[in-house]
Length: 53
Image (cartoon, rainbow, N blue to C red):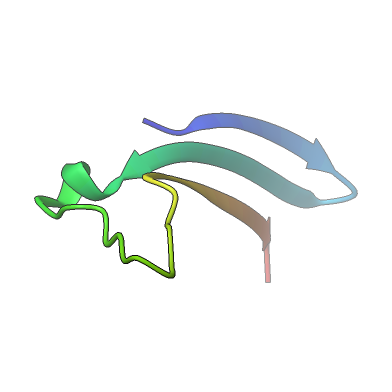
């Protein structure tokens, strides 16, 4: 689920949202290695501007 906001400004529809996903959400394990450690939670952020043409 994306937490999102929508705003209409100067003839444009502005959409902004973000969500947190994990490797487990895609059936994967977090790829840890001895010299490299990764975060399990990743933040996905979208910024969209729509305007009528």
